[in-house]
Image (cartoon, rainbow, N blue to C red):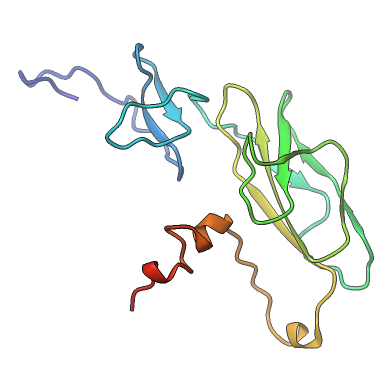
Length: 173
């Protein structure tokens, strides 16, 4: 950034950090610290709640691979993360797990029907890890078995919300 005299007053050195959807990056109000913000606020002041300087670089592991498990009864899925002090949170549907909308992982998750599990590692002071998603198919109809399976997973608001792809107001031809 340059002032009116053409002098550099601020910069992102060594470069602008990698961005993720749903987060903004800027200067923490009242400081010179550059942080990520959990709520983008274009044209407004940044909200500092849960701001952080880096995303958590941790992979959430699933001990049962995604796939078809027809006739194998309930599955017991163990989640793991390799970093100390992280908490794993998950959802049983298509909702993106966050600090607020999730179950805290403590014991193996029983899967006894066609299900999608989404999990994230969280640690205070850091941004979330990448969300990991596994779909499990335990019962399929003959018609379903005759077709290739492609599981498209997204937060329900991306489908049916005001900006959702299934909202007729957003359909363009």
